Image (cartoon, rainbow, N blue to C red):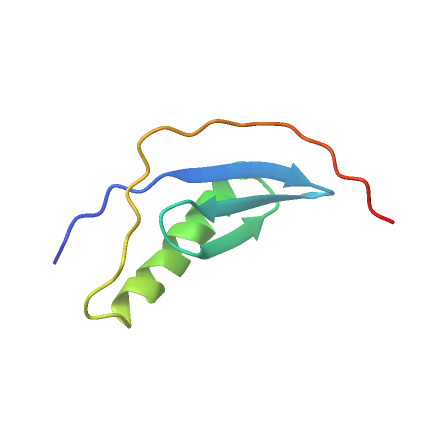
Length: 72
């Protein structure tokens, strides 16, 4: 059994909270932030259960940068 130190992002979208792991491509949601994180942890357990050698991207520092995009 391996220990992974993962970083999560959580934000509110409509009436739900979205939780996303920044190290692997796994996300979930819930009605509360706590529920979204709990659901993400369950999704991550299932994700790692099926992979013998998971590729985990190491995230050192995260910056939130705002930008704009004009869509034609």
